[in-house]
Image (cartoon, helix red, strand yellow):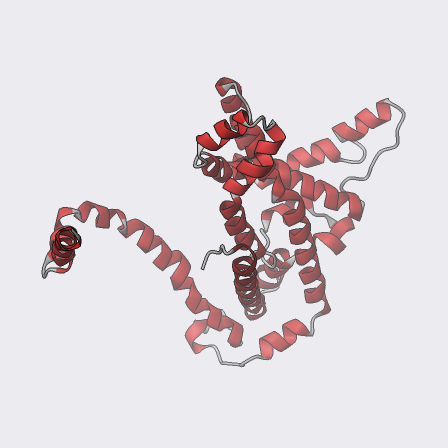
Length: 319
């Protein structure tokens, strides 16, 4: 029986590695390779091509001389960066805001996905998903305008409501503590609904028979969530958490720039705004590139460390 069963497998293996097999496959499925041209071109032009510009961080870059003719200065730019006190302030703010964002925003799409998954009405479920997805498609510039209209100290909708009931106005955008709360809440509102897509897709992969068996055993809804739903999407949570930890030093430009102002600059100034002001406004391109290179290097260390810890604790990772 073993010899007869192994014979077809040996023939199949021989068919795969026979000379000209890969060429025949490429000729037969050339359309698939054509579809890869645009994604590959995108990554080559916009991802790998700009990597050459990292050399600016090790040069005294002159806009008129160009990258190639600008003189090398070694690590002098990094020495200047680490001697700048403002750099440590924006690094602290970046780590603080990203860590708080991780604590507040990361669980939000998981909770929303579980809540949506528990809805019995399909029509109401689709309506709720649509409403939750919409903020993701709104530009941060528009979101900033909405935030200022809603939370402004004197003319904001929220403070007007508080004044109508005899309460004092809250400085949501001018007090540093309240600004951080507003920053985090706005981030949850803007991104939580869109983040549920991945978790809802992971929830569809859970075996429905597990829920049926739990119903037979008399398990309640909360019990099924704790012992079936959450373990069923654990691998997805771990992968996304590792990727999120790798972004602790990196932060988007639009959100802190639009929501920030002079009164809260002690907390709102982050690495992305520092790079913008240093590189574009002050024309210190080498310093700005050095800060960007520092972000990438530290982010890589974070993601490798998080992946190592995840593999040791949960036996799951991305590498």
